[in-house]
Length: 102
Image (cartoon, rainbow, N blue to C red):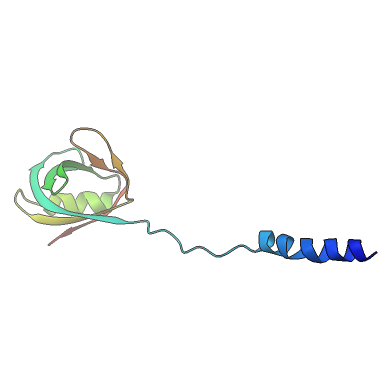
């Protein structure tokens, strides 16, 4: 009986440690790139130069398309996106969420 109690009390902290789940901080879902507009196209996209090189910015929403329509070559812009870059040339930020003129 003593051995069983010792075994249970020795095993109990291990089981409690495995059951505890620490709440993790949510990861940031937005990244930012600053750059200069170098070329504007008619099909919901424009190119810009930044510290990462040349980027091709594509949008899917009409709200962001309106913002592209207001841009001019040479404008300083800030792009908010999901944080993923599609590795093409030029690179493409995945899921652009906002475009702001600086």
